[in-house]
Image 1 (cartoon, rainbow, N blue to C red):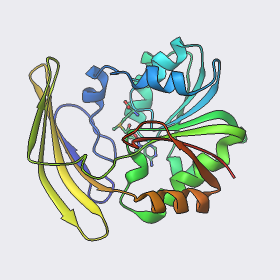
Image 2 (cartoon, rainbow, N blue to C red; image 1 turned 135 degrees about the horizontal axis):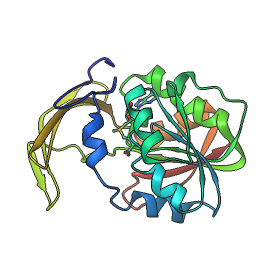
Image 3 (tube, rainbow, N blue to C red; image 1 turned 30 degrees about the vertical axis):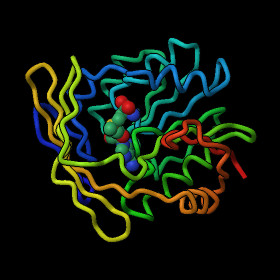
Image 4 (cartoon, rainbow, N blue to C red; image 1 turned 135 degrees about the vertical axis):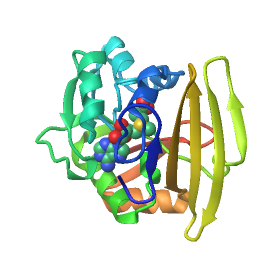
Length: 227
Ligand SMILES: C[S@@+](CC[C@H](N)C(=O)[O-])C[C@H]1O[C@@H](n2cnc3c(N)ncnc32)[C@H](O)[C@@H]1O
């Protein structure tokens, strides 16, 4: 398990505490269409932290080619089943060093908010290493105010309880996210770090990237380009 991260509930969990069975039953809720609209048709995509293939599958259906990377063998096994046609790779993002460049590098699910600064630098360097000149890195980040608790968010499909929210020095937040879907419950303890606009710019630059634009008014989706 990654420091400060853990997960409980049915089935296996990844080192960051994500529950494989939770992501298996969680549908895409528009992220796939959003990403497709932000990139060129028929793009080659390197998807970092692909999980079960929840977004991989629709990206393939949109006509993109996807190399799908996750450090969890349990997640990669699901990608093979759920997204045949993707090229699965079981690896840590920070250690990935392929001899290929892609039109798009996608790193969503707030992976950029990992609390460990050195790990974040490694993740961003991997994004920079794999993007072709003129290509687009698409990132999804957590922004201040997103992780407020205690809170209960419920729709017809799932219930999410945010609890134990704790502000720590250095803009780090700890929290517990408890998801209930179809009578099954998973809890994930997370540790995240919000980046100010200036930190985002400087950390992208240090990795060899530049902020191209915020793709959404709330700044959660970001595009970056190689320097
Ligand atoms: C919250 S899940 C989301 C999966 C997928 N992006 C989605 O939206 O359904 C995060 C995934 O990223 C993977 N992950 C987190 N940090 C990673 C790292 N450093 N290297 C490889 N995979 C990582 C986890 O194993 C997990 O499968």
